[in-house]
Length: 95
Image 1 (cartoon, rainbow, N blue to C red):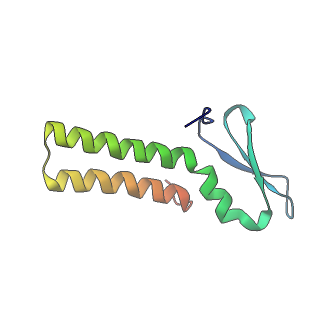
Image 2 (cartoon, one colour):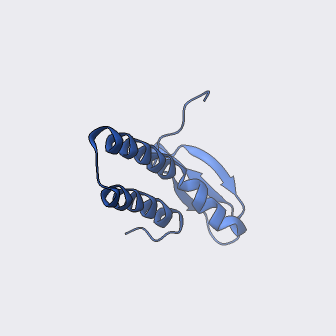
């Protein structure tokens, strides 16, 4: 991958009804702008850093389980927790 990724978390900002949504990174760094009607798409884009981190965590967890050993139930529970947290972030249901 060329270039560097803007570190998360990213967030949505809006100037008001009918205005475009801005996706901003740390230190108020501009990522992109989307039409107001694209709110769900904007939420997905704003969750990109967390989704990438979830994928990395799944990879680390799998590597650890297969080098150190774990029961199938332990593997399943850990991976479900990681995936569920990432999905909740995208769906705006995070705790």
